[in-house]
Image (tube, helix red, strand yellow):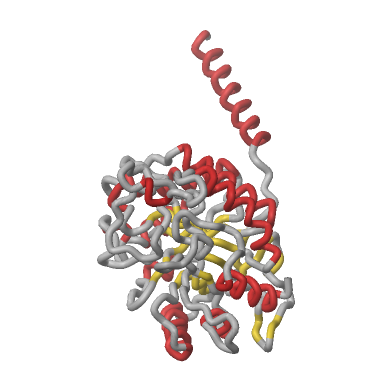
Length: 368
């Protein structure tokens, strides 16, 4: 009899706690979905009814590469490299707080999405070696609390503003800091479950930045294995059946396998290295041909070509071919602190000619 009473009491406690968790769950304001080739926010296509110079803008997801929003460096020997010019020290909390403060101005110019990554990106724009240690994921695949607290600040603000986060999980040069494939899988599960618990529905997932055979240490993050992680994310649903839209990104000559195309909800491409407009169109057409009869959006979420004052540029060519476009800007040699959004430390304001060029054209195209 005591055993039965104990079992009933335990069941009741679990049930009450489950109901409390549902009641206490954060109520989100923004939900991103996909219908065919269009992105929807809160049940309506983005930029509903909008065209620009004959181009269909409705359903697109213009974005900017802001991968360092939760950046830190756990390597004491390189941490000093990211010191702010005014304080002469690096401060990850300042970095995130200034990111959040800048977000409303981005949105006012029509920016609907930005890319973050749990392992950041090169703080120099491009790097052959990465001695710094920037990872929200520890060697065992466990999420670091301080990183996720910073991520929460950004996702909360994005949700409030009606913005979407393209959340990357792994970055080449940092993925080897996760010890093995089981730890990689654990990190994916922990991230998706963390997002579900916080009820974020304004997030789409990029498994890894530029999936390539030579860039990553773990086979499951390479072209022939990454579909397993995409399928894993698709299978991780919350109690109401919600799951996260997911893909991975490609650059150069790398192309998605049939398994990746079948499992993905959208395709991510990078336009780095392509300055000729005809070449860019041909690049997009290759991906469209690989999709066959499957209809899903194509998003270019990294492109370091500008020319925003010209009648033709990578951004406009992308929109003309119904591909969402993403601004990638970093500080080049001898350029001032304000330049770029990937170089550390970053100024997250719209405070250079290049930034103003991008946001000015975006505002014009989107009608914001």
